[in-house]
Length: 196
Image (cartoon, rainbow, N blue to C red; front, side, top):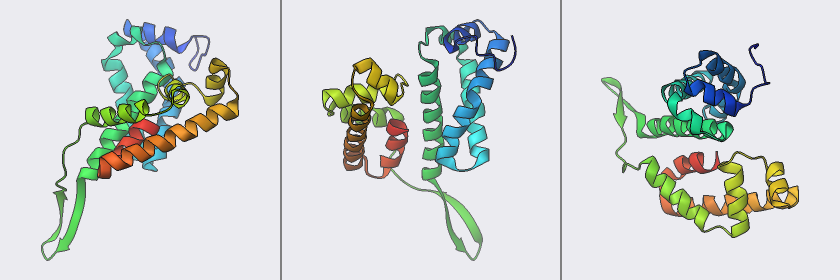
């Protein structure tokens, strides 16, 4: 088996990683590191934090390897881990700011804001999704939770690609509006989680 070998499905590689197979882990790394890096770069626009995210995602994948045999959609699983890592880093950036220069120099301080956990954000996102029309909700969930492209969603639902794009556009607009109304300053974190 050569590095970058695509003769193995991601699902079969995940099952092998669950048994401690380091070669399968390397293959998954080679297959996905670029995608994870691109997602992180989309949010950070800087190589160092993006490289950190890649390392953290694969570290978490190895640490939780025994759970991987139950994963049915590795793409969606890795996307979710990546988004969660990005959210954690963004939360740290939001909560920590540099303050004014004083006669004694610059100092760092922590902004006092209410602590909002990712579970609370997830609750608001679920509420926003529940408010969608049945068609919008189905398209959104297939695309975001199952990791399907809008073309694949259209095929699965027997609708046109343009219809799936329109439903997704309406769903995202509705979710953004709901989150902005209900989360205020944490709207950006919620968007990273829901729409990223």
